[in-house]
Structures are given as C-alpha cells and as structure tokens.
Image (cartoon, rainbow, N blue to C red; front, side, top):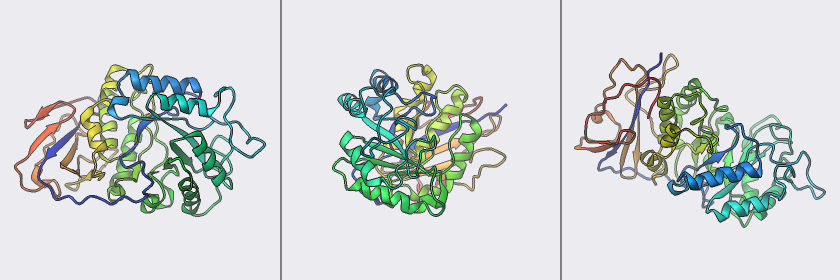
Length: 375
C-alpha cells in the first residue's frame, strides 16, 4: 500500500525575487495555459465533444477560474488536403466546419485550439505541416484558432529546433495571435531553446493514466525549473485527473505538482461525467492562483530531496511574486514529514505567514496521513 501526501503551502514573506524575462513575446501564454483537451479522455475530436466541454466550462464554474482553452487533438482533419492544399476538417466530425465551432466557442468567452504536426503526417497518419507551414498558419489565423499543439511525428532525422522555428515564424506573420505549444516529447534538450520558439514545450514522453507516470514526469522535470518564466513553460503533458485510476490523494499531488512547477494545466477527462472529488481538485482556487501568479518561476526540489525507488522528492519550493510556495510529498504515510522554513532556499529568516491550500489551514500545524497521493 502506498502513502503519499503533498501539502502545497503558500508562504507570504518579504522577498526580493527577480522577475524572469519573457522570451517569445507574442502576447499570449504569459501564464501557463488553463484548458481542456479531448485526448486523455478517450473522446474523439468532434464538434459535439467540443461544445460539451465548452458548456461544462461554463456550468461547472471552470471558466470563472480562468480555464479558457478548448483544444482538439489528432484526427480532427480529413485524411487529405483540399484542392488548394489547405487542411480541411473531417466533415463527419465537424459538419459545419471549424470556423463555426470557433465562433461558438468564442461566443462563450472561451478560446479554441487545434492539433498539427511538424512532419509529413500526424501521429495518426493525417496531413502534417512540413512544407506547408505558411499556408497552415494563414489558415489557422483565418479560422481564429487560438492554440496550436504542434507534434513531432513523421519527421526527418536531426535537430527538431529548425522545424519548430519555421512554424513559429509563420505564426508570427499572421494577424491572429496563436499560443504555440511545442509537442516534441522533450527531445533535443528543448528546454534550453524552447522559450525563444514557443509558449510551452513538452519535457517528456506522453503522460499515461497511472501513478508511475506522475512520478516519472515530475521527477524528470525537477531539474528544468530555471527555464520556466512568463511566456514560456515546461509542459508536463495533459492531466489525468478524473480518469478513474489515480486515487483522490494521488490526483491532488498530480494537479498540485503540475501547478507549482508551472506546467500548462490541460484537463483530460470527460467533464460531463467528472466525479465531485476530482472536480474539487481542479477547482482549487489557491492552487490555480499559484499556477497563474505573475512571476512564472517553477518550483524545484530542495533539501537534497530526490526521488528514489519510484518515489517523488519530498521537499519542493519556488518563489512567487509575493512569497514562496512549498510542496511536501509524504512517500510513506507512517512517516512524518517535517519542514523547517529556514531551509527553503531564498525564503529568509522569517517571521512567516502561511496558508495551506488543500486543507484551508492558516499559520497552524498541518498533519495529514492519506492513502496514496494528495496535494
């Protein structure tokens, strides 16, 4: 039996943290994206599923919390381009076309995203954008697409950076601004150059619906905190909260770590069927506020805490514009996890005022033991 508890703690303290500089200054993606994608939910990319998710954003109160991107993944398009060489929607999935759906999404005060690929085909064999970058960027702009997830299948060997730069330049030439998500699985040390190319960049292989995936991705991204900042963030992949495999406590840790490490928070579950416990997690205003605060600095392990034997690092911390965030992961529910705020890098000698966001405690003792993971 596993026991894990992540306690996300906001420490309000006097700091002299230096704001990180924005890199790709395209006017969007200044904070990590908040949204939804159909892929992890196992839902096909259709107009019906798009609108179901969009309406759920409104009815569940997610829009009011800042969630705004409704994104479609691979297989939204037809298998071939049209006679002019343009991408075209699958007419059975989008019978009224993409622009109609985009207008409907925008009418709700939300934003719309699509999927593409930097190779000759997408990962599912649909048309890719290699050699069509300017044409496809112009089409996205004409449709009003707000988010472009750009994958890495069916590509030539060699460094991926030039391919992603080509699409960046094509997008920047358009009248409509599009958030640019580099989905190339963390290859070619993308974190070292991604900030000059896109608004976020994947740091690992695909997330899967299980605790080991959470551990592996979070641990693998632990050394990349320095590369995150306003306008560009390490992308730990779409969330698995609400998909029925992780326990409630594990879902808390999954969501909390993604938030404090400043990953985009893209929900990947069927929002029309989400359990109340999972909904409470993704609606936690304190955790969302940490994700969206202005400094944009990612949390990282401290106190020489490292994940071992499939466990996460125990102690995490990062600066905020008005304080610090601290995350505690308890890898063994029978063992107390104790943190001395003096040990938090850069925090200073105190005194401190603090709030714990999952349990709504303030300046008091936090004591929890839970089966599995929680934030």
